[in-house]
View 1 (cartoon, rainbow, N blue to C red):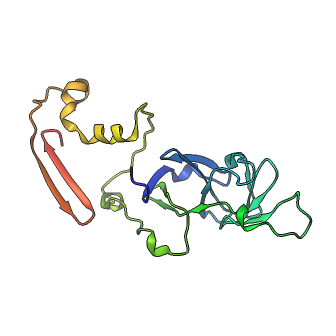
View 2: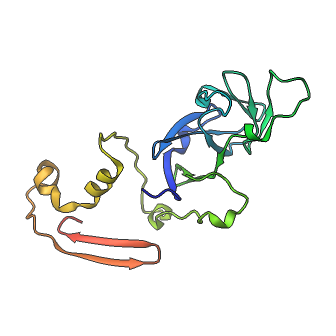
View 3: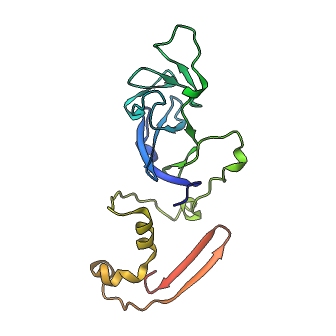
Length: 197
């Protein structure tokens, strides 16, 4: 799996002010929108006692932990700890890691490394050019495969297994692959395995 990358995590219209939890490479994040509709993404658990922040609330432009009421601003800084003396500052170690988040092609995307001061170390957000073309339609479906991520990717790329494992889907297809035709261009790889593609 690619650690330093952008991943689509959910449909954009499913994200509102109530935080929701999403998972990438076994790591949990909470995402939500502020009152202006801007997306935010944070580590899913409070740095204090590890409470699930998807059970918390977005209130007065701050994310509030449901366990002890710790509050975090849009940068992840802890701005209020109710159990501390009035006016006392939260320690720096109480900050909540925040993550770059974007919305594109009706999907929410998260970059899996926390925000850092050096934004040049984060690659530019780039998706498939087809997602920007008006003649293409985005169609969502959700399925859970009880398999490791690498097996899922391998299965999707391995078209020669289709007539053997999925004959009802492919129909009567000769399982001899012509090619496949492969080419590398910019940041993409094109594989065209006739007769399956």
